[in-house]
Image (cartoon, rainbow, N blue to C red):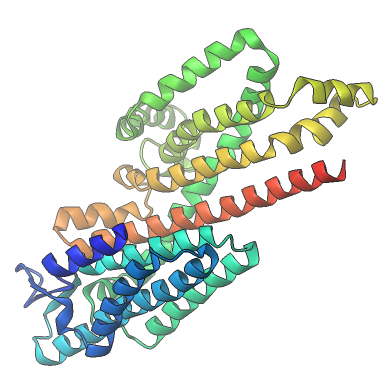
Length: 382
């Protein structure tokens, strides 16, 4: 019901699309009613349907019905925006700029949040969730292939920068992957220290706490001077790409930021393994290696995956800031768009970052659910 109220308020007071004669002037907000009748009616009926479903008593049936209504709302928003943009492009100037309005984004958020809530309440299986996500992605791809959004300014920005976009997307993923890899390499011995050596635990957590309190942009800036000095003193480092600006300081900073949540979650996972369980395993003849691989690691696995989930999502977001020191990534579009006061360019970088974070969250949630099911099955077998 709350989501429906947000959607209704957005429809009443915000524009669905914005139309400007060129990129230099402010656009005029256009309401949803200007869109084709089929999409307009579907949006209104979908909001009404979601409001009525909030009173339904049967949770399972309500959840599946909400998934269908949310899908209809999603399609109506996308199709309505594309077809209204086509109508405006046929009658307007070729230099006209047609942007997505606030009401469009609010309705899109309403559809996604309603579907996400319904999927959780319906307790869908892993294969069903993957199938639902694939169906939505496939439907969007088919609409894009049919050039349903070709007259929207955001789509034009994408096609104008397609080659650069793919390159920066690859850089963004490389930065995140490298940071997680090096963070894992460093966090494993640090976790062993804090788990096995109590006196060192406070020192390690204190240092990690200091690292976490440094603002991201300050940490990126602090690394420029020492890395530039090292590169000047040993030119071989510069030939390896280690310099004051570029990917090296970005990966170092992202790695440092990944360590605190990673070490804390790893420590929590191993510390919560009950002592009587370990004593029982030792009593059964487990040596230190077998105790770690067969008892401690499986029991700590959910906490380890949770830590990796936090780190992956955090790194995807922070990697955008790395564009300020020449590391590239999707943040390039965000900062270029801010500098040029071009909202579509900002969205061209921001939307993929959000989608990457959601995809990482979905992937690790699946892994977490599988790890918990594996633990439950093992307990049942005992």
